[in-house]
Image (cartoon, rainbow, N blue to C red):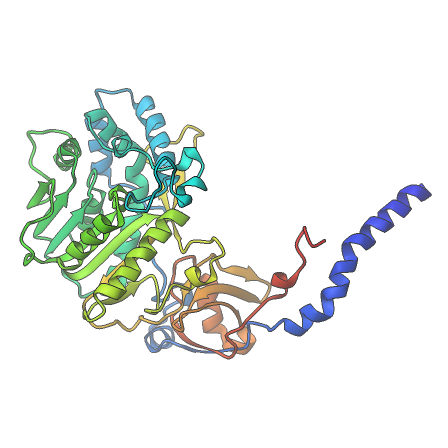
Length: 449
């Protein structure tokens, strides 16, 4: 017994001594994140005090959770896939979704030595190297149905969340035209029509796969080629319009940017889409490091090539500076989460699903009143009598803001407490110290121990 107690004592001393030695340094460098000054947004304050608005329903909340496909779309999926075993479509769709989520973008215009792989590609395992484009091409009816069954729920939830944010911040928007590049099975058309059906007069759906365009049109006919389309003036093309003068109110490219073989082709496409939009330009990709880096490259290209334009970054950033995630370079992408209800339960029986995504939204109109609000980059940490929000602020930096009723008031505390990942905090925050650090960042790692 004495030997065991002695061993435990020795082991505890070995673990605690490094922490005890560094404790004075840790305490001297810790600065509490409650040292902030914030003013509640005037519109929110008036709505709370005069109209009885509950703080948890503040204007920064994106009211779009557990999105489900419309019932007519779900019935159309069943009719379109009736000639194939549904179980096989679900399994292959889940496999395709996993493949797309783990996809990497290695452009072909990178310098390469003869007989050797590029240095960047040598560090990538063979399983993650660039796949041939034919792997993701929808070259027949079954592969298109696989995309429909495996990806429609998740993509629709992401686009519905983005469009909901635009609609909440710009309620006077009345888009007449919509261009969806890389439209796939038409999830962008469904999401846009769910919000602006009565205003949309022209929808141009562009996808390089003829089979995908046919399936997207059949979906709008509810699985019956002899029925009329559910939406008016929907046109399907395999190429973008040749005329550079044609403008569309909303232009979007979602989950299709990885198909570009080189940076030159990608930036040419971005320039073409940028010259086409009249109100909003939207780019969406997977919320992985690869997808985030791809969108960051597009963001830097737009800043360099279109710096004299009257458009500005509408979302997700509250600033136009370099992304602080890139500056920090800790391997964490700037991504967000969308939850949805599955049309078909997964193989493990789960009815609900989540998807991580990254996105950029540009707007040509003047900035709205919510421009500059801090955006939550992670779920709010709710604790006893306080909450901590990890936000991207208007100063172009990442901050951990702690809100309490005593120091910031009951309304501000409740607004922050009710906010979720991806929401905006309806307040103007002044940071007293830009070098905010926490004790957890100074704790010794396992290797140091």
